[in-house]
Amino acid sequence: MLRDAIRSLAEAKIAPYAAAVDEESRFPQEALDALVANDLHAVHVPEEYGGTGADALATVIVIEEVARVCASSSLIPAVNKLGSLPVILSGSEDLKKRYMTPLAKGDAMFSYALSEPDAGSDAAGMKTKAVRDGDHYVLNGVKRWITNAGVSEYYTVMAVTDPEKRSKGISAFVVEKADEGVSFGAPEKKLGIKGSPTREVYLDNVRIPADRMIGAEGTGFAT
Image (cartoon, rainbow, N blue to C red):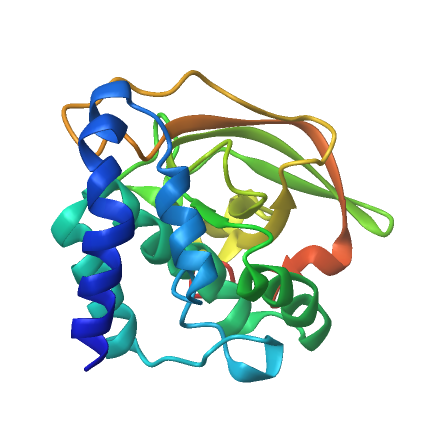
C-alpha cells in the first residue's frame, strides 16, 4: 500500500520533470515540493519532532520508488536521513528539537560532510579542524563530494578536535549554510544523477556555538 501510493505520486509529480532535470543539471525543485507536500521528504524524523517516525524499511521504499522515476530526486529523502541521523543518534535534546523540527516541516534539507580531497576512503585522515574558543568552536577546512551542497540549509560536519587521537579525535557538528565563512565550490560535472548537486564545502573560520557539537567531543567518528 505504501509502495503503491508513493509510486503513484512519483509517476504523477516527479517523473514528468526527470528528463529536464538531468538534461539541465538542475535541482529537482518540483520533486522536493511534491515530497514535502506529502510528508515524504524526511519520513525518518521521529514523531516528537513533527515527523512521521517511519522505520528504515519504509524510508527505503520511499527512496526506491522515487529513484524508479528520477535518481536525482531520490537523494532528497536519502541524504536528508544521512545528514540528520547523527543528530538523531547522538545529539542533545535541544539540538534535535532545533534541527529536526524544520527538517520535518520541509523548511530545510540536511547534508552530510565527511569526505575531503585527501580523505575519502581513509576518512580518519581528515584535515578539517575544529578549535575550541570559549563557548564556541572555529572550523577550518574543505569537504568534497557533498551531496545537495548549496541547497541544504544544514550540514553534519566531521572535524578534528584532537589530532593525536586519529578517529577518536574526530567530533561532529551541525553547521548552517548561513554561518559566516561557509561557501561552496562549483557543481561537479557528473556522468549521472546530475540533478543532485555535488559540490565542495569550504569552511573559513566558521565560528559556531559549542552546543552545536553532536554528542561528546571525540565521538563523531563512532557516531
